[in-house]
Length: 359
Image 1 (cartoon, helix red, strand yellow):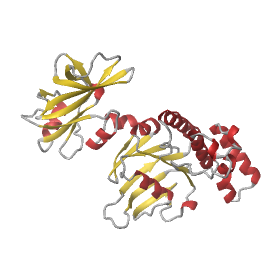
Image 2 (cartoon, rainbow, N blue to C red; image 1 turned 135 degrees about the vertical axis):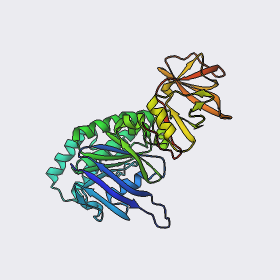
Image 3 (spheres, rainbow, N blue to C red; image 1 turned 180 degrees about the horizontal axis):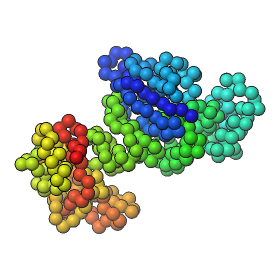
Image 4 (cartoon, rainbow, N blue to C red; image 1 turned 60 degrees about the vertical axis):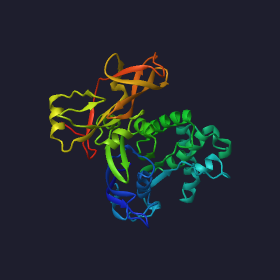
């Protein structure tokens, strides 16, 4: 069990001046499952590898339980890492794979067998201990990789895209199992993924990175409802938030000529903001199809059973703009329909620098 702390930690790869991870400050609580998420090249895997000791920290420090491990080799950090490619030995059985690190550490045979049996029980692998990895499904192999980490009783679990090789249905099942397992074991876990749905459903907190810079770290619900900037607003949520560039005219903001309404405090904050160029964000569930409002034509209808996502082509500031509207239940809307879109719910306004305007 451990707390983890990055203090202004940076990684600059040779041959480039731009840090892959730029002055990262991040505290991870004892027993927390923290997810690092971001697009390709955002620095999330590099940050994980810095904690593991697999990447050099050029500036700043990394701590585990208030011990500076910045210069310690990986084997001295008491961490266990789970990779996306399982990294199992094909010639060994499941039991031998799970106990291999313990054997290397010269743990007595009886204790090894006890730890492997307990991990197998936790992961539902008891029937497969004598099988070779080639005789297992992808999900079972991933559980073996998890078992290999569990038997070591590490202070911290590090997981680098561990579910990316699984099919969609198995990913959903396995991420639920992983979240439940982490809660039962109570081991501090840092989990990397590019899938923001995976991040939102698993993490106690989620840290969003872009360009090597930490954009926001918070509970999933807060990231969704209170993004600190335009990047987080557009990255978190599926489908993504509708984001439109707008200009402040006579103190008002409009979408397709339809003025937007704000409470007095928000209106005052918008007017106090510098610059006339802003952007407005609205989630699909806060848009509705109705008889009046923003006029447009339906281009795509994504029917998902309990809800549908309707893509509406509108004209905004002289250009085409797609608005994605969530329509609850079985929609009657089809491609080519002429519709109107109304705004009913939270509006997010971002200043010229991309930061969200707050009251």
